Each structure stands twice: as C-alpha cells, then as structure tokens.
Image (cartoon, rainbow, N blue to C red; front, top):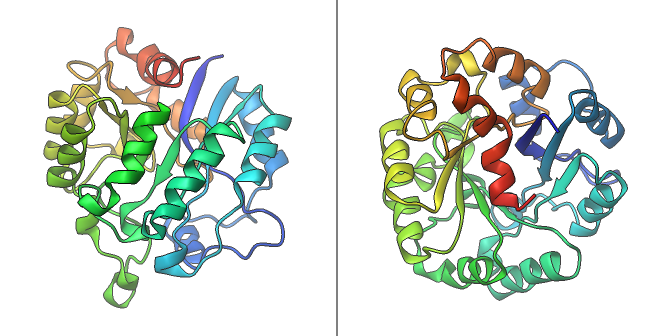
Amino acid sequence: MKAIDIHAHIPRMPGIPEYGIESGLRRMFRMTDEPDDVLKMVETYRSIDTKAVIFSVDAETETGDLPDPHEYIAKTVQENSDVLIGFASVDPRKGDLAVEELERAVTQLGLCGLKLHPIHQAFFPDDPKFTPLFAKAEELGVPVIMHSGYAAAGANTPGGGGFELAYARPIPGFDSLAARHPELTIIMAHPAWPWIQEQIAVALHKPNVYIDLSGWAPRYIPKELIMEAGGRLRKKVLFGSDYPYISPVKWMEEFAELDIRDEARPLILRDNAAKILGI
C-alpha cells in the first residue's frame, strides 16, 4: 500500500438525488465529466495502490438532502475491502438519534470513523448540546473528521447559500472540543483558510488533533502549513484528496513536487493515517 487517502466522498447511492449543493461544487472545481460511480472510484484507487476512507455527509436537518444509508457504505467497503475504509456520518442536530445511529454504524456495520461538516450541518463543535455525540465517538474509539475553514458550498451565491463559515473556525470550536475530549482523535479536514495559523496552533497544542490536506491542489496549500507539515507537524498531517473534486492521482503528482523533507513524505502519505486507523 503506497498511500492512504483519508478524505474521499462516496458516489451517491443510485436512486438518491444528488446533494442540492452538488452542481455548485462541480462548477467550483471545474468538473465537466459525469459523476463517477463506485466502480470507477475503486479502479482509481487500485491503480495507484492506495486505500481511501470513504463517507457521505448527513446534513438533512439543515439542507433537506437525504443521506446515503450506512448500509450502502458498509456494503461498498465489504465488496472492496482491499482499497476502501468506511466512515459514518450522522446529523448532530438529530440529537439522540444521531448518537444511536453512530453506535449502530460502528458496532453493527463495521464503519470505523465519523465524518461531520459543521458548515453544512450548521453546528459549533464546542456547543455542549453535542457533547453526547462526541462522547460516544470517544467511547467507541473512532476518529472524527470535520470540515474546517472556507467552504466551496454556496460560494458566489446570494448570502453564500445561507452557509456560515464561522462554524468551521479552529479556535474556539475545535480547540475547545479537543480539550474536553482528550481521548477523541479529531482530524481537521482541509487547510483551514483563512485561519491557517489557528489550525496550526491547535494541532501543535493538542496531541489528539490532526490536519488533512484535502480539498486543495498541493501547489495552492499555504506555505506556512507545508513548512510545518515537513517539520513540527510531520506526524500530525495526513494526505486527503477530497475525491471526486480533486483527483488523488493528480494530488500525489503535485505533492511530489513540493519542497518538503523526504522523511515527512511517507508519514503524510500513509503512516500517520495508518496509525490513526490502526492498520
């Protein structure tokens, strides 16, 4: 196994409409081809000897979009276990139902992490009302990957589509959450622009907080984050593509051209994620 992509979106289950924000995301990332299906996704990762962590996002309360069933994700992983690892996603605003569904997805379906998106789901990670959900993830011993920083969804539309960026600011949200749940592994998804310095500070200060580099072509990742990824944060930064919006093939090609220490490369591409996932 050459690498682990910690951040990949599973194609929508056949019969479920695409997310309301999908057309805008495809324009933002200049995607002109038809959306990939599961077979194409699996072929992509096998061709580069890379495992991918796949998930969807349940933001039904805020957006009205139907979530992909966890059974669909689990079945897809079971049929392609050589390259796929599955994470759950629950809507925090569903309260006890979200906590129960996370436990079911992990203990009964074999999913091994939780994906959340504070902007799409409209919640602050450090809001005490969501403590039961994070406590359950901590109890189950599964990592939580959460969007941080700017979001493409709603960009350049009136009112940003109603999405508020403040939900995904590293301080206080992620920092306070990590302090309250020291045994919970938290992955801040994406370079958290415009709060890169806050993101770096949280990852340096909290042993249980990591950063994935998904959603950005490597040549555009802020230089201060790349510098830290090759230095003090070399054991805290993870490869992520944000498939299908960014090709993992192209991401790794660009990453190879970055000015970063050689000893940090395998850590970022594979070893740090392998440690978190226990593989």
